[in-house]
Amino acid sequence: MNTSTDKAQILTDPVCGMKVNIDKTDLAITYNECRYYFCSDACREAFEKNPENYLTGKPVKRKGLWGRYLDRLQKSTGGKPMQCH
Image 1 (cartoon, one colour):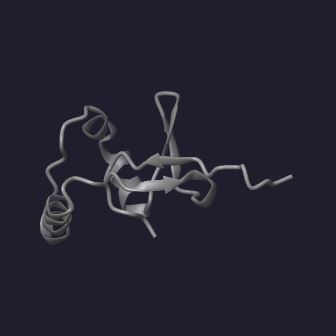
Image 2: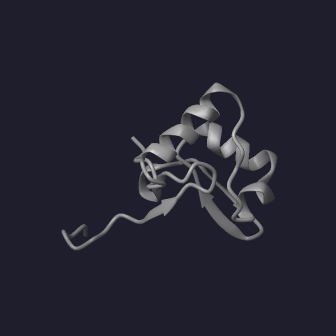
């Protein structure tokens, strides 16, 4: 039974920092016995290529036009995570 006190479980995408409702996404993988959720296929694929790069806590140096756009967007929002969907 779903009640009004049920809350969505929101986690942060380890690649881009967006908030992800884990009840509404199928984009997830398990790495080192931990489950990670993603806002898009692109973030999931980037994580799969080099997961340790995103788990060290260091800021990610993004490449290309899209990466520069995301960096500028993050700077303009004062580091607050973007809202997904």
